[in-house]
Length: 227
Image 1 (tube, helix red, strand yellow):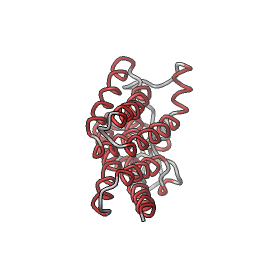
Image 2 (image 1 turned 90 degrees about the horizontal axis):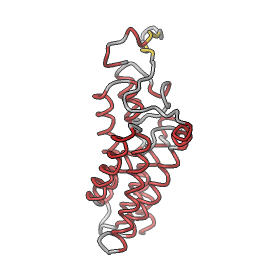
Image 3 (image 1 turned 90 degrees about the vertical axis):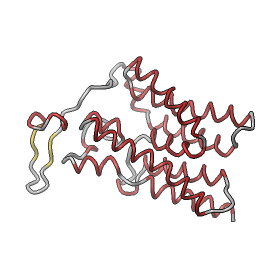
Image 4 (image 1 turned 180 degrees about the vertical axis):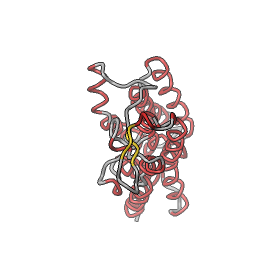
């Protein structure tokens, strides 16, 4: 019975994590974010393509995509089982990075991984946020900070599990999710090593898509916020 609950939690997480928040916000602005920048659908690529407000909205939605499956799994399956948390959280990360609605494409899973950890252990999530913010502030590489932040979740979770202040199930989630998210940054890692990775504030040229005519206009004719 426990295995069935784990599988159901995993499927619940995958279903909610698959919601294409970045694509939806992009289309609302008249842009398919998959066609520009890294081609990913997360908040970082949306920031490069659109504007901070749109990226912030995507960020909030991506965090919720991680947190809600864990909370719903706890509400649906009693008694509470930390392995259900782990399954729901990992399902959300898989859904975000391999969305069924986007032909198994998506974002890199950083914020969704952190969002899933939030109800498991808020201390880890907030500490990971600081761990990510410092290298971003120093280097202006979001990808570098993201990898450090998500990896720090595994390190802190291990420390808490060893000291019996958190469960091994939560550590298992933190370890697997961080490894998955770092693997999703394989192209960023190559660009970082080559010195060609984009920094915070660097924009990409886009074309506004007109749904009625199928025509496109160059980004130079867009309002400032959509450049």
